[in-house]
Image (spheres, rainbow, N blue to C red):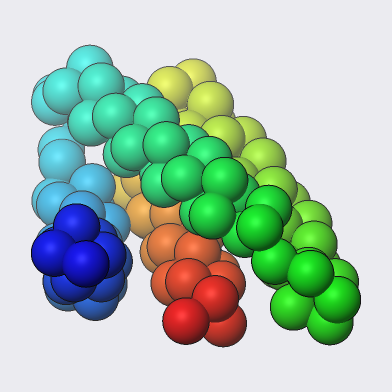
Length: 124
């Protein structure tokens, strides 16, 4: 029971943290491109772990809940792919395209996090 409460508290606290994450990405200058890329890769890896945990928990669902979750997972995978593509674009961006590229990744990451939190709420 305590573990469930701790997990719920962690999940509920993450939207604020996620907002800080994509705002932090937007703050990187082109001179800090390598740091921005490392941070972006970390964000995507962390989200992958969250999605795997969500998938594990949802695999116990049945009926309509399972069908809804499968739809949410399809959306999450599409958003994850988009975030990864935007991260790749950020890595290849010239100094002139840097701001657009980093904002593109930050926005894609925000969309991914929003979809993740929407799926989490449905599982409760």
